[in-house]
Image 1 (cartoon, one colour):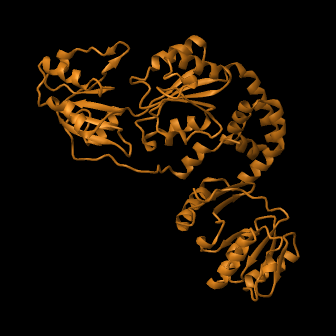
Image 2 (cartoon, rainbow, N blue to C red; image 1 turned 60 degrees about the vertical axis):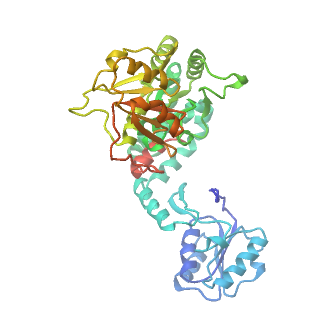
Image 3 (cartoon, helix red, strand yellow; image 1 turned 120 degrees about the vertical axis):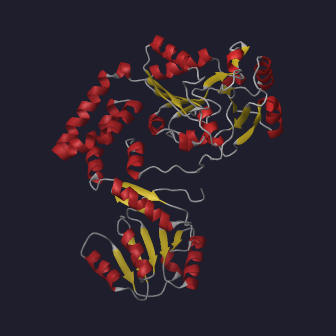
Length: 483
């Protein structure tokens, strides 16, 4: 991120606008939304700018025009400067002087000469949404703006202004978590309904009810949500998981959870890795009992705890143990399933997990359990037509192959290994069961990976995207509600 987005206070500041043509007019219309004093310097101005100057003389907005060429002294006391003389040489000269004076400057349509860039803006004063592309794709920024415009009620600013006087009362009545929950409920629709029905009086009554409801619900405030983070690609995270992450106070995550998924959580949340590395005090891993205790402790303190697990928490994710611990402690717990590695691996191979005439079922098994190498019904797994996915099987691949072959499995049974399924560094290697260890060795696979036995690689490929596209209305619904 080269350009860091900020909201600057323009009240009683001076903004210099150099230029009097069509480009300057477009910037002036935007600047008139601020509370700044606007000084226009240009020998000649178009009639529309002249109209704005004349109207400002009769109103509260302070806009003045100096009908002359730019002088270096015009930068004195300027908060920022917009340059739109429509003369490239003159624009560069003014921009250089502004940079030398340490004044923020924007040369219209010339980002290389600018120290600031004006984003596309959705104005629901005091709510302002800014969309920028660092000057690389202004048309795209405007397209996104149009979508956001459609999603935000034109009365949103009025609702926020009506709620503003109550912020101090809410802050005095509730702790920070309860305060955030109140405003989430308010902006999830309750506030708009009350404001539409009764105006400011409706807001007063609603805030009173929400404060009272929090007092009644204190003992049930905290809870745990077990969330499946999927195989890695953030695009494969469910919308429900995104919504919980956005509201979570504490995020307990495993080592295999992609960092891009953690970026979807609130920045104010507490993040704790409870995987096989990174434990405070120099210990190499978290024991399950310690994770349970931490999860319960945080929930009992009133936190919404997101227990984020790679894949699906219900598939080799120790969900039962964590559910039982929460139940024993009286902590509410819910589950948001995710896409498991076997499904993502099959998608990467371009093949379905089941197919009529080939296999009517698939078995999910782990190569390791609490006692080490897991024991299974190897005779049944070795029967013709059996199809299964092996989790945590890379280190046990040699023993796995031996067990299957010893129990009569066909050495030519299709076998595939998918490492980092759905991620950019994914590896898909395939062959036959007899060569399973060679497949792993020759492809350089070390894990995390899933082994698929009985499935041959297909021709289709899983779609890869770097960005998730959510309809604007859904994006606003998911990300709105915090204050």
